[in-house]
Length: 310
Length: 302
Image (cartoon, rainbow over all chains, first blue to last red; front, side, top):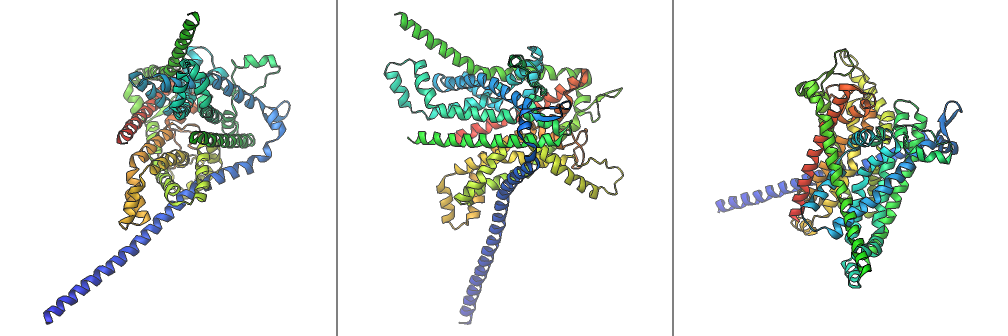
């Protein structure tokens, strides 16, 4: 009897002990969970706080530097003006040349990969090359552009050299976005067109390109965003000049002359020139541009999704 | 008959134009590689590979110049590693927040913020680092090295500033890739874990994240590539002299070395800078190849 009782009591106490340890385990788990939740929220807060403080700081420091004359005149000690009109023009010219050449090539590459190519060695090499190209940092593009377009082809420091360099840089962006868009065009469109007697090129021109236009435009806008923000690839290819052409006829030769974009000018203003007013002024303009570009791609992507759901 | 031939030739021309467009990427990568090697190797001969790669003295414009780039290589490795160590945990936890914890409304605030961080030009990061981070580092430096007689004061332009800027700049890359790989984890796994009595946090860290491991790793490698290749932002905050990569030393990265000296370098100095470019290119290619392997594994697992 006594034995049994003592056995029972040990069983009870063992149960109790395991219960207590379970409770303390659960408590420990709660504390652990709480700590991890804290870090998760903290991390997410960091991104938001960072972005907010970047925007606020730049706006506070730079909003009063941006004015009509800042945007429409060129910095000149002689005239006593401070402005970035030359840099804006350079940026626009580089965007135009780059996109005029890069868009057809990028779209063409995507069409080949998606519509013509059969899986094989050639395709995997192209895909490897595109992948590699998108992983190469802009400073390497800058070096290569300086050596190849600048020296070997003899374009020197010019807007053309800068644009040719940037074409290589934005090509993967356009190819990939177009490819994604082409993949969402239903096969029935292709079968329908071919079945009605259309040639492949005709089908691509009249059916595929229009249907994948939102994707192509998204790629183009992203590429423009990349060009607007680019500096390392342009420093040694397009140089840093900031003069405006006097007449419209001077605009064309400008392509073969050196010219710094807004981003390059910001870098020079903040470092060698020590002109922080101009730097923050440009930073405000850039932030606004980047924000608009971001908004535009989002709007497009949303529209794109709707067409896909149909 | 005639129009048939015309159609066929248009078709043919179109096809070849597309092939050529696609081949331009190959041509670009091939010529970049050829140029980097052709321009980057002469200095290995004229300076000597060992002196160049393992030399620690960088005096390109001295009367008896020396071109050792070991500290520059080390700085890039240390800086990238440290920024990854700081940036990746924050990025992965942010991705967890966006996919597992946040309500739709909160996610709708955090997600666009992360996207915008990715879109901000690197010179703006550099400008802010220059205006905010460097003065703070200078204060810290003055406190820490008050009694030191050997420390060279940098005015706050140091490795630590560069690491912080890099850690911020890789955030969006790692967050975005991690988010999509966490989203791809099947809901059944989570449900099973929760049904077995695991808490939400336990499920996230013991089930969901391990399942998303390869995708997160891809994001980390992308981040490494981004940090290695970043030039302008860190050039503005890291200082301008070649030193052993210590937190409060003014340092030069592979990329910043190119940005700050390419403009005026001549002769052997210029050759050596191309070698710096080649070293960077080799690092980047190694990262790219790892990335490709990871992606192949991921698609094989699907």
